Image (cartoon, rainbow, N blue to C red; front, side, top):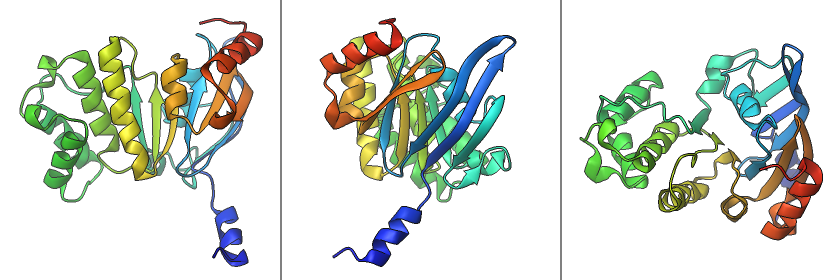
Length: 249
């Protein structure tokens, strides 16, 4: 039985991701125009949008890789501007760039990143995440020998190694063939049981909807749609995309 006190406690829990008025300009170009977004703990939000909509810019700001021109970002209760080091410990970032070292083995890559984040029982944790992404048998192979899809799976292992409560995924399937992309997304779906909060950008309607609990659409630097996944089908999403974003791919 859920008591009134329990409901009140749940309501006071801060969102995993909270932004208000996040804007970014490059010279005279306004890439982001006041983004207000809340992602609850354990929620999987997929952000769609045409090329140039500002998706990557927004995720780079959340990841601490770029500073907003205006606005505020709070991740897992920590203010990004006030304590960027603490925020970086709370996030894992996956993009079309793997951020792994070609000349190191899969295990060496993970040990390197694990030492940066003071991961406890590092050897055991490295073995766990390699198994999670299906790379246990390639643990001692150098990353440069991996296919593009395998490198992305190693990138996922790197991102979750320190057990961050938040994952930021910026079009991680870019450059992958269909089979490798499906395998990558299967690994990502497998992370759902860990109750992490996930914000994913993608161009692929079907795959994105298959993972989402909530769908947002960014167009010309503005958040123009924010709806529960249950209210959308791929066809309806395409219609909304065409209506709100001009149908640009």
